[in-house]
Image (cartoon, rainbow, N blue to C red; front, top):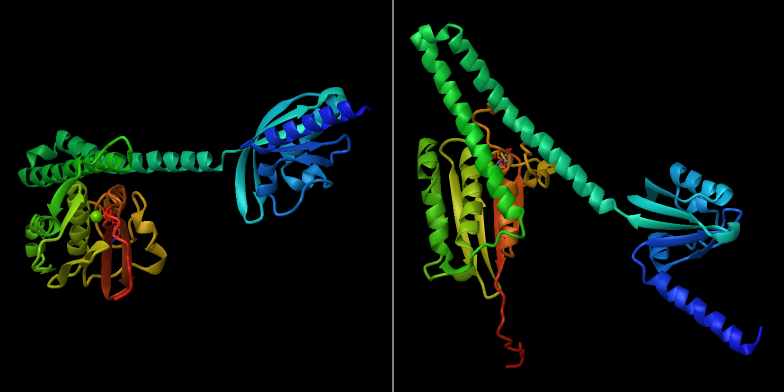
Length: 358
Ligand SMILES: Nc1ncnc2c1ncn2[C@@H]1O[C@H](COP(=O)(O)OP(=O)(O)O)[C@@H](O)[C@H]1O
Ligand SMILES: [Mg+2]
């Protein structure tokens, strides 16, 4: 090979290298014996150790993939397969394209990581299953009561009133569920924008607590405000904050025993505004503390289905707060109570440099 030709070959190699390394997909090439001869950066990043020289079946472990690579090598057929494989601690979902190289010189495998896509699919399926279960329960009850009434119970006024009342309560539950589902969809949708208004947060705290006065009064729960005397003004969507607070204060009242205290506390500093809702209720067991923010999750308890909420409240609240750039966190001790904390950072767009001298 002349110098000119050599230069051309190495240029070709460099070109190929750059193309391979700029791919999002993980790529590896195996030779006629099933050993890895070439990898790209995306594959190297995925693996705990160098793959070149090892047997392909030990690099990405999966039966279906191994067969596809063997068939490509022996019969020269390309294949597309979907597979799961565990690398280190993590299990990945991949879509793999397996293609024989010309002249039976080996096989190239391209792995497209679809792990997050598959996880999102699963969440969506669970959501639909949960939602339809939540709809079916009151619907079955309504149908049962209506049938019993039609079949004669309507002639017994006492029973009729009781059944009608049950139908009414279950239909309210369905309505709440429909409303919560709509709100949740809005809170989760990035297309839905929340209009920001310059607001005194003290008013939102007071208004949302006041709208629950009836529920608090019925259980003789004292709602106490610890709110500064000066205005706490921020740019926020009042609707989002109000919605989150009503859910938190509502829960505090709903899950606390009678004659206890619920505190709504507002604190502000230069960097952030913090709103806390603290109760003296049963608290939330450690193992449920993250899960209560999941859609439909409810802590096991002796509540009757009519009384129970939809299990969507906290997931709506967290989404709403995150949509306005804040965080919602929980501290709780079983038997002592719970404290939900909303933290809203104040963005300091004026660049005053922090000179520490003086
Ligand atoms: N302040 C609280 N004290 C004790 N448990 C709570 C409190 N807030 C929420 N929980 C638990 O978290 C679960 C999820 O709350 P949420 O999403 O608002 O659903 P819902 O109130 O509709 O059941 C509730 O079912 C309840 O078990
Ligand atoms: Mg709730």
